[in-house]
Amino acid sequence: MKQNSKNIQKLIENEQDYWNICHLPQYDAWDDEIMKFIDPDSNSIGKKCDKNFRILTELKNSTWSSSSSSKKEKCRARCHRFKSESENSVDDWTNKTGPIDCEILETVCSNENDTDIYGWLHSQIIETPLKPPKINISGLKQFDIVVILIDSLSYTQSIRSLPRTLSYFKNHFKAVEFPFMNKIGENSRPNGAALWFGKSILKLDRSFFQEEESIIEEEDWNDEYFCDVFKDNETHLFKEFQEYGYKTMLAEDWAGGIMTYPNCRGFKQPPSDHYMKPFQNAYEKYAENLTRKHFCREHHQTLLDYLQQFQNSYSGFQKNIPKFSWIWAIELGHDYQNSIFHADGDFHRYLIRNREKLEKSFVFLMADHGMRFGGILETKLGGIEKNNPMTNSRYLQTHYDTRATFLDILKYQSKSGFSQTQPLNIPGEKGNSLLRHQPKTFRNCQTLPIPTEFCICQFETFKADKQVFFDSHTTKFARNIGSKVIEAVNLKLNESGFSGKCIEMLFENVTSLIQYKNQYKTSILYTVTVLAKKPSEAIFEANIKVNSDIIKILGMIERVSKYGKSADCIESEIHRPYCYCRKQ
Image (tube, rainbow, N blue to C red):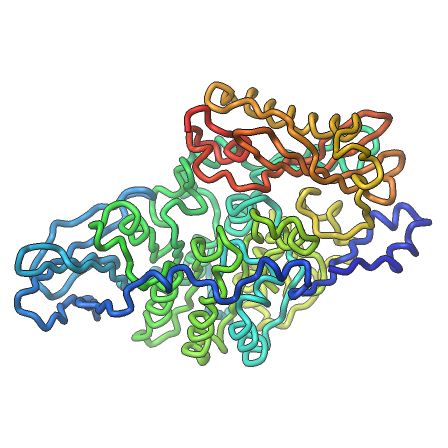
């Protein structure tokens, strides 16, 4: 990544302009610094699966059948239905082929010795009765909306991993890119809350841009409300589209899901007309062990199958039934930056196969956040990638703007035949539609609801550790900053009552100290990376403000190293990154 040093230098004389103007990063997806982490041939699933595996059962037109050529093989089936976010209602097994009335069907076949040799999970769309729209839609110009969200995919990572998909998306569909979409939270939960509900679930620390006092903007929903209260009565995208006569579909490929992991209630009833959660619950919990192997079928492929089935549905009606569909591919790229390369063909084929329908639809190819763990984060570009999800423009944007775009398509542009370009303030929303001119104000991390620790705006910095560390990161100044970060981590655990389950983190050293070249008034700003002692060896990153030797931590402390199951003794999503369980 190259910094715009000359342009920044022109603004140094005017301090206010310097901090107001967001200098966006100049991306090079193939930067030499990052290439050592890239492996386009990576495909751990493909190397392990049995390529000779045959599908022995079929679900078509709500009828299941067996295609086994051997009379000695016997097949059975059972339905999986929604009971709750984490539970399925599972029917009894039936050996009788024929009609079934569920969307998720498990089939198992056994040999002559009654040993199970085959298992498969099928999906389908069973059309539900049309309901009169709650909103008068006469005269509205309604289009289908398709959202394909790939978890942990940054803009530059998409260039590397999905070349055919992006090429076809841009050249055939004339797609517009928004490479400067800034996440508003560390992981999927806060970004999902912004997209689906327009709500913040994290406090927003504005102290970076304040000289003395701390400015904290309270969250819309605290952790207790987000987790302990069903969200059926809240206004969310799927409900709003239903009120306008849309049929809706939601599919995530992980049973934990955005709304429920690790211990939250989510929805009491399915939030959409068609909800794939019973498939994921079956795969991870309820199905037979053989069924749960999935063989050569990957998680994202099951989502694309369900999406295809939804797109082919509701075609027998005289009038057009608009559809709003959302797939969230979590498993594909969440833990490893090279695991998306091999899926390029799947998404490319989906676009080609559905090109006629998609040409008449709004299609969003996007992500919630970039890769959060691994050595790639130690590079300049990697640090930007984790805060920049793949979606689509030329100015700093947030997921609130993406949400405003959905609502603009649904409620406002549909009235005018999609001819409106003037800025629109949608009541109760934090964002501005990407289809319109946006308000003529600075778009930066002071004016937009972006936490400082995730801001992709670029300011001139230098490695302070090269200048102030004389003995391998052991100077008093560096140790004071690092110790302050570790103290804050322990304080968060103590205040929430987790110190009995989690060890006390101990400071080891500061591995990086980046200083902002320009002061903010009389304060010096830093980004520090801190390593904790064994056994956790946790790595944390934080923004620091130093004024008259007073050290202040700005915003959230990020855990930038993997913690896996080492924090499974607690369920709080907010505190798990800070915990290393006493009992491992």
